[in-house]
Length: 408
Ligand code: B12
Ligand code: SF4
Ligand code: SF4
Image (tube, rainbow, N blue to C red; front, side):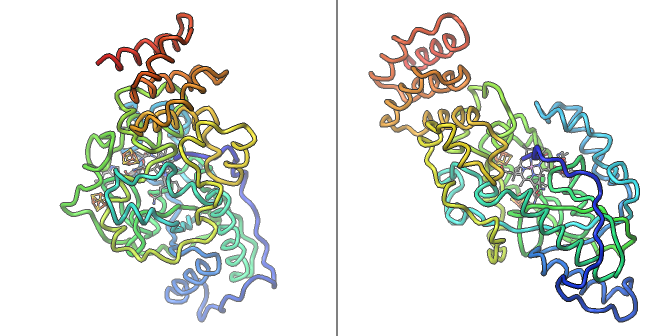
């Protein structure tokens, strides 16, 4: 997943107040290690962040090599902002020249439990778990602000902080890893011991020298479950992800025609993908509660792929309001839903698809609808495809190849 359209803005001052939650006086000054570790935990707790840690704002040098390799191989696809901002992503002081420390938090959200119990492929939900609750950009920034305020109160001095929750050119996983929140899994996720991978990260650059947290030990060992479970074979190797094949990228970031060869593997996923996390043993053994309440699924996200194909603009606005789903347009959701309906194997969906094919929906959507009809097959689908007049553009091409698929 990728940045919100809301910029984080410049560093913000936090002035000490007397009204914020109580924090203990340090026994021998803020740099006393024991006091500091306990204070950090309290700061995290008061904001509802299970894991919290600190690292220096020095260059995130270990992250820049994998990032450069990823970009050089074109594995970022259409995510031009990743290439444009690359030189700054591993240099926190480019973002905030006075930064001395980075504070990072990991907040767990509800994992797809039914998936964890069964096979990832057969029970994949249409919407990835992270997007079902309140927009994490908003929820985590709120937590970071509370922590910054608590820290200003604790230190009894004004501090300045630059917040980032997927909203700034910064390698958040590496910052969080260095702050002791976990280690990298082969699926490239940050694994937090005891919590797993179903977490969202927030980081804050601070104009304060703070003691660094100790590194978190752990590794994947011989396991390779995520690499084998990826429906689109998006991992060319362990710790490397080719976004161009990743369902999360294709359904959320990618604006164009989804390659036909990848459509069947998208299965039932309309927005994002949880497959490489669902199979991870660190999630099975993780303490599955409590999750952050704000990130818990909201009722309006309980929609079927058919609902998502047919969303009116009003329904779309209501669905995405206040959630991370606003990253995808109505057109992208309808495109993705058409693929999922094509994969459903259920011909009951044919009439709704025909209606969409004949509607004034964008060509991009109708191209994918034509494919879905070709995949579902049957007399009704065939007749609709044969009788649709589509000129000689991209839609006509899509109908032609759908009819070819039908005759196979
Ligand atoms: C671009 C992006 C995407 C892209 C590309 C993902 C990718 N793996 O690069 C796409 C759209 C595919 C995507 C998908 C998802 N994303 Co995203 N995404 C980002 C974003 C904006 C940048 C990531 C980036 O810099 N990628 C470039 C690669 C090179 O860097 P990296 O991912 O940090 O990878 C590190 C490791 O792989 C490691 N590494 C590389 N080689 C090696 C070798 C060895 C031996 C080792 C040990 C390590 C190692 O070093 C790299 C540098 O730190 C971040 C937010 C941010 N600003 O950081 C969120 C972020 C990474 N995404 C996040 C999430 C939740 C997701 C999804 C789960 C959403 C979903 N359910 O659909 C999926 C997960 C897919 C996956 N397996 O990664 C979270 C991850 C939280 C966590 N616990 O790790 C982040 C941090 C957002 C946030 N603030 O919470 N995402
Ligand atoms: S999110 Fe899904 S498609 Fe992307 S790498 Fe993980 S399993 Fe593969
Ligand atoms: S599934 Fe296995 S290999 Fe993949 S991240 Fe989890 S422990 Fe590592």
